Image: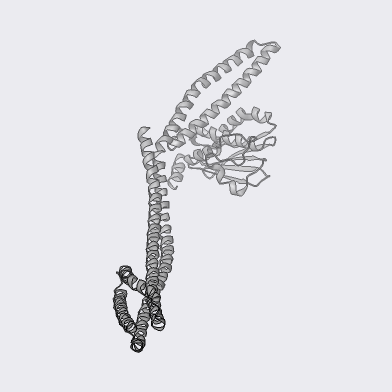
Length: 454
């Protein structure tokens, strides 16, 4: 058992491994997409910063130009304070732009040109400022147009930088949409393929588990077999003792109490016989679970077997209010007596169970090298969709407390009949009863020929 438990654990781990791989693969794809989108978002922040810094550079120069013009017009030196602050901020602004566009050559070139233009403008502004301070207002005014040309060139550079960043932003948006589309398509295909692999693996693991636990099933059947044999021994002894007691009481009893005791003993004998039949059925179930039935064929008459089984069951039929009508013509053959008795008993039990209170007809006839047994009841009937299922193990035509049983009777009947090279079929409709027809080859050679064809 420890080895089997270890193997079962290994199968469980194997069955769970592929689903775990599926989840890991899907998580990996999702993580890659998240990281890629995060990178796009970081690049978006860089573009925003470049545009903001370049715009700031433009505003600094425009404001400085306005301050310089104000000073030249009014001579108020307080207007030069923002001009000086802008000139001090210039190196830091250029350094920040260089860092932001370090990975983009075209933008790096523009930043260097922007830095050169800024130096030209501030050199021009310094010359203009000295001319204005020395009283050369006319010369200073003449130089203002030169500063405007530098500013226009600087504005054009800023527009170019902004344009490239906008183009890069549009390209990233396209990349993000394309990535999402590819991820959805490829992820769906990957999930489909991996789910197919998981399903295939699950089937394989189930097959291996079935093989693994086949030993447990065989052990269970062996237990049933041993238990049935153990039950059979005391039951046989009990039945024999009851029969002896009944015979003795029949010889000496002359008063009422003895007759009552005899009736009670008859009931005990009948119950013991019924229990013995149940044990026989369990034995057949265990034998079929471990391999094909072993038959002990002998010459016998199917009609005689049917008459004997009917005689044993007649009291039970009368107790249920059902007449048992037998019309049996001689039908000799080579069969297993015990197995045929099981076939007849199961079919009659089934007819009594589902047709209680109504007549049951049994016919035996022979023709064309085959014997035919027919059992007809007038019970609840069987729907067409259930007629194949009732011959399977643990299946019944109807369920509920009214119809007790293990659901193995007709399965055993079919197994025994087919082991003899025969066949069984049912004809029925709901509410009209059922006809079970068994066909058995009479000779051993015929039986073997029929088995060889299957």
